[in-house]
Amino acid sequence: MFNKKKSTEPKIKKVRFQTFRDAYSVTKSVKPWIGAGIFGVFAITWAIGISAGIFIGHPIYLGFVALPVAVIAAMFFFTRIASSAAYVSIEGQIGAGASVLMAIRKGWVTTPAVAVTKNQDMVHRSLGRAGIVLTGEGTQAVRTMLQDERKKAERFAPGVPITEIYVGDGPGQVSLRKLQKHVAKLPKKLSAHQMREVRARFKAIGGMSMPIPKGPMPKGIRVPKR
Image (cartoon, rainbow, N blue to C red; front, top):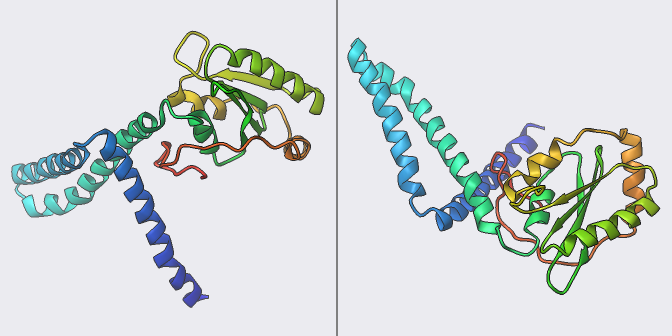
């Protein structure tokens, strides 16, 4: 048991490093100053700690105490900036909404592009405790597509709550940045058993093959399924 646990530790560290490196690469492509920003936050936080130490007569002690605090502050700063940069990096790409939805790891299963037009308007279907969520992204024509998918969903799962979302920045729309949080906060209306039954009904339907934007997605710098 000990050897097995010890052998998995390098793999876990490698995955974490890869995740951080991917997040940093995406952030740097959008915000080239991120490296200097991280160092600046670290240096300022540490300097404040050392200055406080000098003031009370214990600069070395406060310097050691402030060091991990400075690291945490720098990482928090990076997380916030990386979150914003991740959205910027996929905005405007085909399937950006699906990429955000598929990043919701717990309680939701998303099938991207259950309906697509030649103009790249598309509807994604997500299943969770809140029921069926149909998310459309594209032109105004996607509203008609949402209604068509609602009728199909009602036939396959009568009585199951259906929520329609139109991704955008206009009135009555949900922005790409708020999409994940909006879906995750929908009230739960199905039991775990009912949710599994609904998923089983839709499993055979599937969706269309489509490209999904790749890269780390925000929410604690978590990486979406690819």
